[in-house]
Image (cartoon, rainbow, N blue to C red; front, side, top):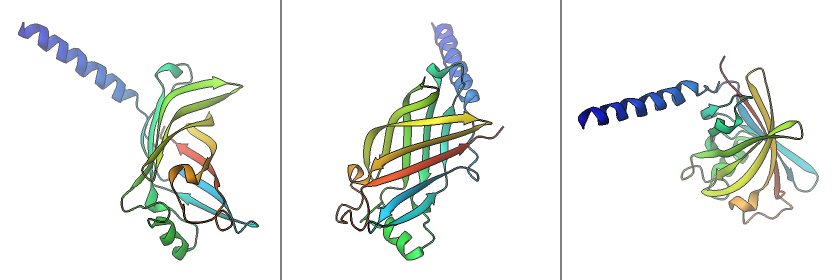
Length: 178
């Protein structure tokens, strides 16, 4: 009976080792999420987040086993205006003291209409919603775009859409090490 358990544990270990060995490493220095949001109806605020980390398994010929489990450091927000950035880190917006990361975990990756689409859960400010992120993949680099409604994540609820538009456009560049 002990032999059966040993064989079972060895097989489980080999499976986990195989899965871990296929995981691709994110190049955090060259990966980022940028955003644009309307400000006062005629202005646009641009910024970025850095500190992307997580686990990526992606083979173009094996989408059934592909997935993303990636987070960025919410406090890394940078709009080139330190006073605004501090306000965006506050509980009024991202609440980075309590919500350290913005994370995406895919549930399925599809190839349709000549592009890839990652469908999964985006968690921001303690709220999780389903999103679809169309993306391209070339030279170990993923590039994707999506738009979200900030109010779906309780971000800046007391700020009217005159000061901050409801729709935030996000572009993601995730570079993997070779």
